[in-house]
Image 1 (cartoon, rainbow, N blue to C red):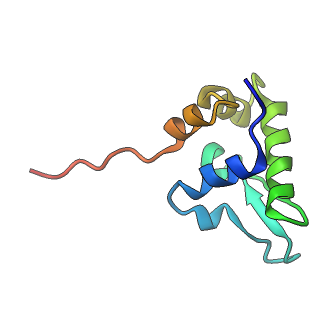
Image 2: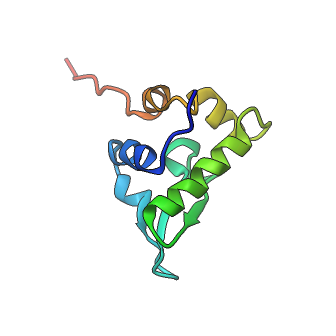
Length: 102
């Protein structure tokens, strides 16, 4: 499986709810920032900064590769999500359908 590009990962994050929480400017440094909370949750959350959002996303991608198969919260999420297959990652992360009350 080919390595996902930064643009592909950013597109994936933007397709998820509350993407503005995961792609933003860092409130302290003002640098572009991407978090991993969209797949790993807030407890295991981490942010990645760069000069551009693409550079920050590349750091996130490297981090995800480092954690494939790792015995940790992040490792479990990365591995179970099917990374680097972004279609599988989307299926893992997308919100569950809301059932209507009868």
